[in-house]
Structure formats: C-alpha cells, structure tokens
Length: 397
Image 1 (cartoon, helix red, strand yellow):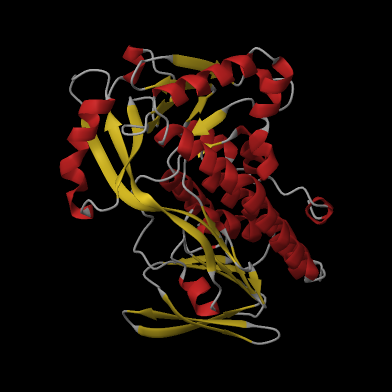
Image 2: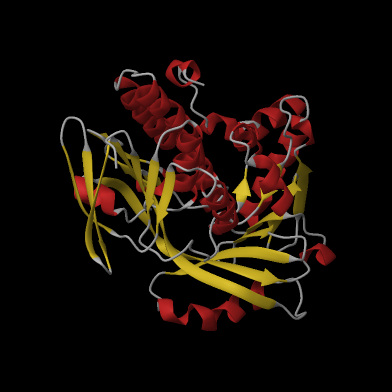
C-alpha cells in the first residue's frame, strides 16, 4: 500500500460515500469494517432535498431515486386529539431542481455505493477487520487490524474515522466526545401497515409525551418506519415483547400489522473535541452524534463527507495546504453545534415531550407559518444550512 492511500474506518453511509468520492477522484482508498457485512438494523432513511444535488454530483442520485421513492408531504399530529396539520415541499419549486426528499434505508445506500466501489480498481473494502491500533508520523498514518489470520498493518497518507458514535478511532486518538446522553431509548421498527388508509402523510410527527413517534413510509409496499421512545431502565432484551404495547397505543386501529425488524439504541447530543489530529480525521457519527428526530444526523454526516472529499482531493492531488482540513473541521463543528444539534433537540422535544396543549400550540405555529409564504419557504430551506459553505469548500468544488 502506498503512502498516498486513504484509509477509511467504517463501512456505513458516510464512510462508503467518502471512499467512493475519493476513488472517483483517482485516489486509492481502503475501507476497513469490523462487521462481516453492511448492518441492516433500522437506521436513517431520509435524504433531504438539499443533499440531492451532491448525490447527483457523485452520480448516485439516479440509482437512489430508482430504489427509493420521492416524498414531499409531511404532517404534525396530536396523538391525544387527532388534530393534524399537513404541508408539502411545493414552495421549494423555485429554489431547487430537487423539491422533494427521497426515502431509502441507509443500508440500501450502502449497497449502491458498494456496487460502485467494485468498479473502482483502486478501491478496496475489507470486512471483519476491526481496528485495534493507530499511530502516525509526519507523513504517514498506520492502522492495525486484527483478523482471523492475525494482525495486519495498513498505512496511508490519511485515515478517516467513520466508525460510529462508539468510534475506536476516536478512542485511540484520545479525543473526548463532549455532550450529553438522553435518558430514553429510541426503538426503531419497520412495520407493514396501511397508514395511508387513515389519512397519514408519508412522514408524520406524532406528538405526545408518552406515545410520541416519528412515522415515515419506507417503501411503496407499505413498509413504514415507526420510531418511539421508552424508559432507559427497561431491559433492552425485552424490546420485542413491548413493541405490541406501543403499537396498541400508536396505531389508528387494530388491523393486522407485521413487524419486519426492530432495534433499540441510545440517544446522544455529542461532538468530538477535535475532528483532526495530525493525519487522522473524524467524520459522521464518529465526529458528532445526534438524536435522529428530523433526519439531521445523516444529513450532517453526508454534508461533511461531500466537503471532505473536495478538501482531501485538493490536498492529495493538488498538494493543497493542509490547513484546508483544519478549516473543514472548524466549519463542521460549528455547523453541528450551532445548527444541527439544536434543531434535532427541538424536534425531539416537540415530538416526544409535548402534551395535548403543547401539540396544539405547535400546530397553530405551523398554520401561521404556512400562511406566510416567505416564512414558510425560509423554514423549508433549513436543511441547506447544514451544507458547508466556506470559501475553502467552494474553492475546491
């Protein structure tokens, strides 16, 4: 392996998209993943309209669009009363060529990118290769993986840690993961059920301080994601037994439903103290973790990946100043701390901590906003604020 290779730790959506972008630019890339395959547990699935331009730029959008489906309708619903407000993204038609979101499980995005990486002769993905060691000098980073065949050594000019909120790379660097952890557990379920028959839009924020949930359609075959919260003191191994209790309260009627899969996970609002240590960079959930309400976690990770691809390509191919990476790191920290994390926190509290009165107040606020075209358009433009907009990023696009 040459010292001009980039080593990416983690084969999630951010790691694989970053690998593909760099490989397309002609940079040799090796991806190291501890698991034996892409993780298929219910995770992020919404690609905000503001992401689609960059996905198109990477020649990924057409296939994402084909496998997923476009969605432009939303609803806020008060669980206790049924009071509902719905709206669409039509107001964005004059602002973007992509006035819609796309729904597709992040494991499906990973599958698409892996197929593309197979056609890149200088890209390699190593499965069941957990990282156990990390060191670096002025010109090279060294990564140790422990496999069934023993320890293996990898070296590259840069290492990008995209290995999730429990990042081994971040731990080996000794970088603190600052912030807080919520006292609830989120349970994400994929369920076959006809929410359309009850007038639900394809994304619904069901507001309630006990039975709050985010309900969103995943496929055209009536597979939906229902994400609710439960007390963290409840045993994790009993999640499956409690799903029926939650659905009895959440679903509009007792028609038969089929749970395809489910998973529980902790909720964080955390940010790595630094995103760059020498020749090692942190990205995605390894850099910052947020509760998923509103879909700002995946969006933040992918926007960070898009700009990092440009920055590293400039540094490696054009011998650009390494200060570009520092500027990238500073900007991504600022965007997460000042925009993404506060927005996700507000959304989480709106959905999962609103009683009937607070839910009604939220709907009234949205009614006023929808009635004001300028204010409504400004609100719908929010996801674009998560994009890197520094002169440094623009200079290398």
